[in-house]
Length: 189
Image (cartoon, rainbow, N blue to C red; front, side, top):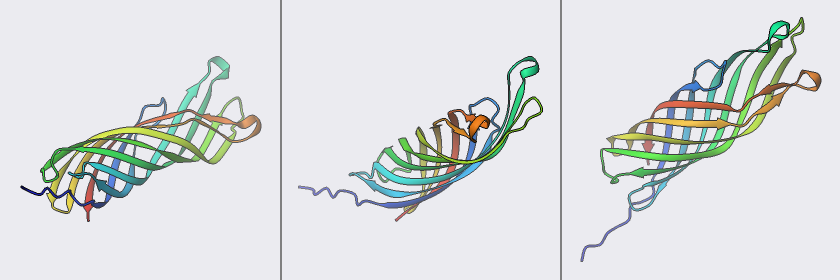
């Protein structure tokens, strides 16, 4: 009778670069970086649990209103999501190519500067606010060596809305929807 030995859990570190395509009106597409670390579990190391921090730049130019009540909002800053990730990796542990589906949940620190130009006034808000963030992901990994994989992935992130500024000069920052294309190297230990 053959003895089947379950796979050992592996630790990983995964730095990635991202192209961020914002789905909100007025946002410019930007770039970002992320670093994830965690462990794989299961007979084929198919379950992956990890923590991730990312930095995604943003820039905004948005016009609203009509007639003499037109105003423009301009700003720039960063979203810094702190995520707990779960991925299910399909395929055998020793396969050259594996695909994955994943979920992310966490908090994002939204920080930057917004100015709203209207009727001779220009209220300005520098801010740093925390919001909930969640999303889904899919992608593929290509095994380069026993300890290193090239990863290409897509993620949809939703960052909850918030208000910045104070008093009459409060400026809304709507829920942010971002599509991320990423390329990274995964180092397994």
